Length: 141
Image (cartoon, rainbow, N blue to C red):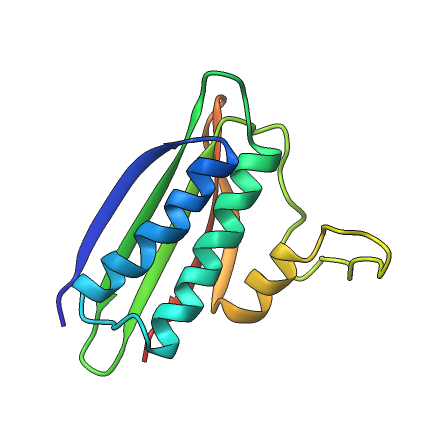
């Protein structure tokens, strides 16, 4: 099992989110987590949700979002950390454990519920006044 980091800047648009969703499974496959495996599918879904949120809620004209995947191998398991950094630190999601279920008549509001259900941990950090990072970690074994 190989550890590694992959980071890429993408346009904060639907196209950028779609590209993130397409890049993630290939990177995981390169690291030894095949496309058709449950860990790859789960991680790809998490990337898709966080990237879609960056494009929808973190969009600032002329600014990008950054996708960072970091694989941390251990003797008996591996953890993938997914980070999506966007240009809207003023639009922070609710804290983990405080999400309200989406109303049945709305078309959005379920993405972070999926992240909370599938990820081992998740949260938000603001490292500077210009960006925020929504991250999650998932055990791959």
